[in-house]
Image 1 (tube, helix red, strand yellow):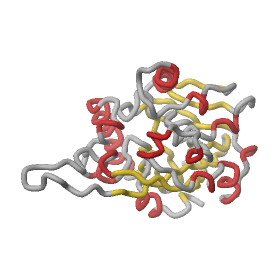
Image 2 (image 1 turned 30 degrees about the horizontal axis):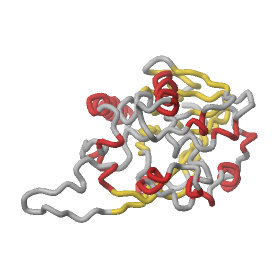
Image 3 (image 1 turned 180 degrees about the horizontal axis):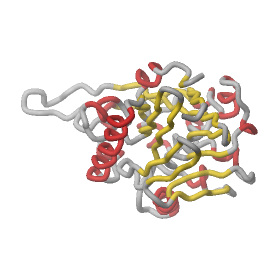
Amino acid sequence: MVDATVRLVDRGRVRADEGYVVDGASMGNASNPNPDHEMVEFVVWNAVIDHPEGTFLWDTGSHPDAGDGYWPEPLYEAFEHYDAADHELEADLNRVGYDVSDIDAVVMSHLHLDHAGGLSEFAGTDVPVYVHEEELKFAYYSAKTTEGSIAYLASDFDRDLNWEVVHRHRHTLAEEFELYHLPGHTPGVLGARIDLPGETVIVAGDECYVDANWNGEVPLGPGLLWSERAWFESLQTLKELKRRTGGDVLYGHDLERFESFGEGWNL
């Protein structure tokens, strides 16, 4: 196994209705026609994979001005990243011992606004930004037309970036560091398997927002699901990885799960 490290970077909290991320969480029925809505705090995170072949940044978090008009008001009302201003990418990397200038490559799990808001730090540089082909297409389609999803902002990613487009369902990024295409939440979600000495990290990302999506196999809410059929197939891909490796599965936004891994792996 390669002697790499995976260090988690806390990028703040989003407050939202649980029903967005767990299908049916707030649905009424005959005996309970008016169920309570539970507002939940979700984590926004990045990771730094410090590898002998380079230092990789996983995602870039939200734009620090998310709550000051950068995000459209309806989106911010639904997904309130209330401390985004306290979580600029450079400052958060500094807190865990890195600078933006240390990053050799960026991997974008997908291009939603809570993941792509720091890409401006890499505009005009030669730092490669890995993204799946289907994600890049859908992001531009969504941001530049009235079709697709409202969760993409052109100002996040329509920049002079050194795109490295992933075309296949699996892509070896570095030794023992493999990307997996996990469509469902969006057409082009990327996850990863990172094999470290004595342990494996499986990055599920937003394929699984929270534990209920993984353990209960409950889909995301309809507003966050591009394709339920593709989502279920991607979930089984991850579960097979878990069976084969016994690895730790890192979800996209589950605060308790995120905190359970401390600062990361092999540190």
